[in-house]
Length: 301
Ligand code: ATP
Ligand code: MN
Ligand code: MN
Image (cartoon, rainbow, N blue to C red; front, side, top):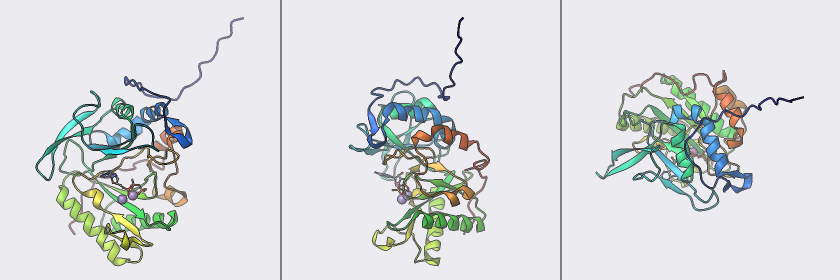
């Protein structure tokens, strides 16, 4: 008799035309994640990641020899990433013009991995309206010694204060130590106004509760407090993008969560690149329905 085998379901990895070299190179030695694994991860999550990353200037953390070796933060490039990584000329403060990178598909993400990329950071605005941010991010950076519970409570506090101003916000685990509070914006106000709002909002938090929050970079003032890093909200600044992997032990990823879920979560590095299917399923879960979406503009303060 002829036995016909049932085809085994394979995870749905979108086809990519990018040839990834050295697929067996260990990028995360402690968790045996290879360059091939990382490329497959980004191809697999491209559908849930691109809505947040596509068409905005990106900066990359590249670690060509793996995360334990030399890594560098790259903002510009003249074309070495190939046809799937696009460029947009941006004039900087000093008047010079640099080509920033942007992608809009799985090929673009994987082409970056081929070049040694682990992390994708992005601007708060897209190449379609560079001067008008569509996203604010408050990056909560707890001082060493504080635990994740403190960070979670701080995030929820920011959420409530933003709500009082009429702004809906969403939490994202950074994949590192902290939580990012993301405020979607209809692109209308320009960078200086958005930066000024973020600055004044963070300072108001710190003034109201000086033992709990700081809004200035100074390390000395951070002792036992949470730094509300509002500086992600100026032209040219970047923040880690949803579903981006982090160049940290265990290959954790930045992960959107709901406010309700956040209460039960124990660490900002709750998911890793090995949780691909779970991340994809979660993205269409009820908990995450509408995450990151709100049609709103900044109030006059
Ligand atoms: P964590 O939760 O551990 O704080 P994070 O992503 O918030 O994770 P931070 O160190 O708070 O990390 O933020 C660093 C920010 O600065 C990142 O969002 C990134 O976009 C940006 N950044 C990182 N490295 C550089 C660099 N070399 N030059 C300029 N900007 C950088
Ligand atoms: Mn942070
Ligand atoms: Mn920070």
